[in-house]
Every structure is written in C-alpha cells, then in structure tokens.
Amino acid sequence: MGFPHLLAPGRFGTLELPNRIVMPPVRVRLAHVDGTPSSRDRAFYAARARGGAALVTVGSMIVSTEFEPPSSALVRADADWFVPHLRYLTDGVHAVGGRIAAQLTVGAGRAGAPEPGREAPVSASDNSWVASPVVTCRALLADEVRLLVERFGEAAARVAEAGFDAIDVHARVGHLVDQFLSPVWNRRTDAYGGSLENRARFAVELIQAAKRAAPGLPVSVRLSLTHHTPGGRDLAESIEIARILVAAGADVVVADGGASEALHWAVPPMYLGPAPTLADAAALRAATGATVVATGAIGVEAAEKALADGQVDFVGMTRALIADPDLPRKLAGEVPGGVRPCARCNICLGHVLGGMHVACAVNPQAGFETLRPIGRAPRTKRVVVVGGGPAGLEAARVAALRGHVVHLYERSEHLGGMLRHAASAVFKREARAMVDWWTEQLRALRVTVHLGREVQPESSVLREADEVVIATGGLPVRPRGVSGLDRPSVVDVAEVADHEVGHRVVVAGGGSSGADAALHLSLTGHEVTLLVPTEEIAPDLFEVNRTALLRRLVESGATVLTGWRLRAVEEGAAVAEGPDGAARIPADTVVTAFGTRPNTALSGSGYEEDPRVHVVGDCVEPGDVGDAVHAAFEAAVQL
Image (cartoon, rainbow, N blue to C red; front, side):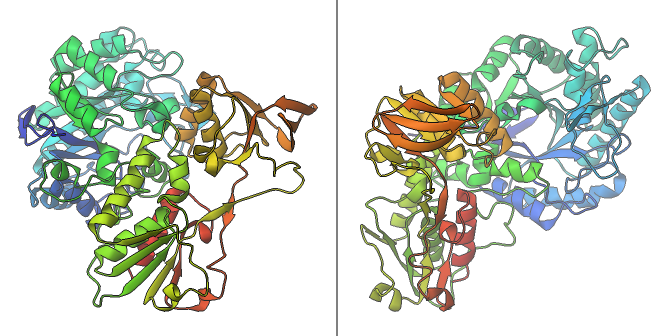
C-alpha cells in the first residue's frame, strides 16, 4: 500500500515538517560522563534524520542538578558551557537535512533511579520513592518550584542558541511534572496544588518559560493520558489538562500512557496488541483540536489510517526508528529494501533502565553507528552458514552485504528456527514479520538457501568453505525424574505450532516461553493450566514486558499454579506436585517448556579449533534473540 498521508508535509507549531513521522524523545545514554553529547550521540540521531524522520528528539536533557543528581550518560543543558557541545549535536542532524528537538526535564522526582549517595528525592508532596517505597520524598517548596521554572527557561535559551529546532516539556510517566499534575501524588495546599488549574501551574509556567526564552521555537509537551494505575489520571482529566497547556502556549501534545508503576503502557510490548494508546490520542485531538502526536507501537498501516481519518496529526515511532533508521525513506521508495520491523521486545528500554546505552535486538548497529559499520570485504569469500534461526539469518545477511558468496543450510523446511515457533503466538506478529524480513533480505542479496539439508561434521560443504558460521541453535531440555515424556500427548513448546493441541492443556515450565505458550493457547480457546516451579512467573523476562504478560495471563482465564512441578504424564492427565502435595490435572496435551541447551552436534565436533569456523547463538549459550543477532553480526562483519 502507499502512504500518502504519512508522507505528506505537516505543521508542527512554527515548523513545516516534510512528513508525519517523528521520533519522540528517547534517552540513549551515549553522552560523555560530563553530560556533553558524544560522537555516538551525534551519529545515532543523524542516522534517523538521514533516514527521513521529520523530527528527532533528544530525550530527558537535564536543566538543573540542584534537587536531583545528573543521571549518567544523559545530555545536559544546565550551564552555558554546554552550548557549543550541544551545537555539535544539532549540526550533525542539520548536515543531513534533518530537524532536532530538545526534551527538557526538571527531573524524575519520586520516579528517579537510585544513585550512589543519593538522598531522598523531591516530589510534589511527601510521596513514597518508587525505587525504595520505605523512603519518603521531600515536597518541593514553592520557591524551589519557581527556581526550577527559572532553570528551565535558562536551559531553553541554551538549546535555542545551540540550534535546536523545537523544545519538548517532559510531563509524562509519573516523573516530577506529572507528579504535580496528578492528585494521587499532589496533595499540596498552595498555588501548585488543589484545583486542576493549580496542579497544572508548574507545567504551564515551564511552557511559558520556554516560550519567553526561545521565541519562535515550537514547544510541545509530552503527556501521559491514562496512567493505568490505582488512583492515577484518566483520559477525561488529561483532556482538561491538555486544554490548559495548549492555552498556555503548547503548540503540540505528544500523547502516550502509563506511569512509573505501569511502564508497559508507556512502551507497549507485544502483549498489549497493536497501537494500544492510539484511541486515547485520537480522543484528545477530537476534544481539543490540538496538534497531537500519537505514540505507542503504531505500525505504518495503522498510522496511515489514523492520519487519513484525521484522528491525529503526527505519529511517533521511537522503537521503529531504532530498529530501522531508514523507515521513512523506505516507505517513500527512496531507499531499497523492506522495513526492518521492531520486535517490541523492549531490549532498547531494558538497556537504558539498566544503566547501559540504547541497543536493539534486531538492529545491532543501533547505538553502535560509529563502531559497527558494514563495509565491503577486501576479498570475496565462499561463506557457509549452518542454521536458519535468527543468528544464522543475520550472519548470512551481513556476510552477503560484505560482498561474500553465501550459502545457508537449514535442516528443517522453514527459516526462523525458534523464532518461527515463538512467532506462532497470536500476540507476536512482529516476530513473524521479522522472519519474513530476513527471508526477503536473503533473497534480495542472492544468498543461496538450502532447506531440508542437515550438515554433518564430515560434509564437503564445510571443507570447501572459506568461512563457516555455525548457528545451529539449541535443543529442548528433558529433565530427569519426569515419567511419560515420551507419550504422544507431550509436545515441546517449540513444536506447538506444528502439532494439534487438545482442548485441555497443561504447560509445564514457568519461564517466558512457557508463559507465552500458556497465554497463546488460552487466547485461542484452550483450557490452560500453567505449572510454574518457582514463585515467580517468567523471571527471565524484562520486568516491563513481564508486567504486561502477567496482566494478559490473568485476563485470559488461564490457571497459573506457582510452586508446582510436573512429575509425570499419564493417559489424559498430568501429575504435578505442589506445596500441598500431588494432584492429577486432566490434560489432553502437555506442553513442556523446560528451557534449552546448546546444540553442539556440529560445533563440538572438532571445528572449534579451526580458524575458519565461527560459532554463534544458542549453540554457544542459550539467550534471547538479541544475544544471537548481535553475536552473529559481530562474527559476520569480520569475515
């Protein structure tokens, strides 16, 4: 399909943008320790601008350290000496014809992360600290609020001087400004508390300070429309707040959802389905007439329809542009190849929240733009890749881009490996799209794919290759002490998509693969019992994703038994042992999800000493898709 509305120009305050695709504020944590942007910062944002994003936004730029220590690796704007360093960043984006905005933040308040030696954070009122609920935050004095407004204006003047094209006010996900906006966190009795107008006063003054300090620059405000937490803000109140902020001078509202305790709504993983916050953004625009940027896992087809229907004005695609910086230009036909889909795995967010810099499971160059170029190899080689899972597919793609003649061998009749099986879940359409993208890339790059071909250690295929990448993946773990696992009613979790599954299903294994299978089967009409041997479900999953998964499991009606282990499979039942003894659970099918172990049939057959051989992915150590893809990229880019 074409994308005439997505690619049409649009007004963003005083800016005329070439299309409707923007990159909302994103924290990438690539800055130097002193808060100056690095060459990697510049390359990251410039890559997205070069790829056609109409506006890219630097996230969470610090305006003051008086009440909150600077978060490491974030860009700062709290002193005049930062200006030339900030100009280095804007020059990089402008050099490729892009526009760049600065999101300014007065801090996270109660949502702030622990820092060495940090005292209790400040907040709108004496709220508990998210990181340590037994600690009570200190309520800011009114004079301190006004000081932050002053600092915000000073920072706005600096970013304008440094060449930024727009300013965004951080007022989302339960951070400090949001704490003032919301009655659940704001119990003040002064001019900054009580009525809706008073609670919005801090945000209003920040907008006005930015307008005064940077005349002519558009000012947007990023606002969480629904908190999805007990006592949190609902859509109706957010619409009233947005009216106040627009009247105060906000040119654009960047809409999202969630709070510190509900980040899965701010950065929706695959479990929440497509575009879960788009309806809220559309309701905001309909009620206020404001210029609205919708965010939150909005695919290009849904974005085109939302724009065509006049629901929103722009679409924010942070993770999609991390996964594929060239997305806009590919849609316009200016860059060949299909769009690499975002898997919505949230590795990008997990890295940032974990104190690391941004990274992407499906794009190993994201955050490494200056460190991981794909150049042509000095000599064309014959490269054999064994295994058609994520690691093998990425290795074949990169080797072909390097100019090598690549042959990929896969023992099954399908590409994708474990990812293909995982992608069978109804909520993992992005994983299916990822396999399709790799398949199309290999076709376009003329990689020869041999399906149904298992390569043996003595094969001439290996002997005749200049370079060999072994990516044979993992094998299912079969624990001792469980009888009946050879029964026809037992199916490994990786094979569920290829088997007929009965109505009553017991899933044994509480990791993410077992929980995903339980959710998928429950959503598709099966009666599901999930046996979790520990008290924690899916402990291997990133916490933001895990929260969403657990919510969906409860909603699906699946029975979840924590502290229960599978002991035997019998005719028509699974025997499990729990805290109160054993129980016989009726089951037509038992799905085992005990994890994986490396498949060393090839890698452990003497080739590990051969300098031509590179072993990557789960056949080295089982991990997630990102681990496999990054290892494969690193190996292939050196061939």
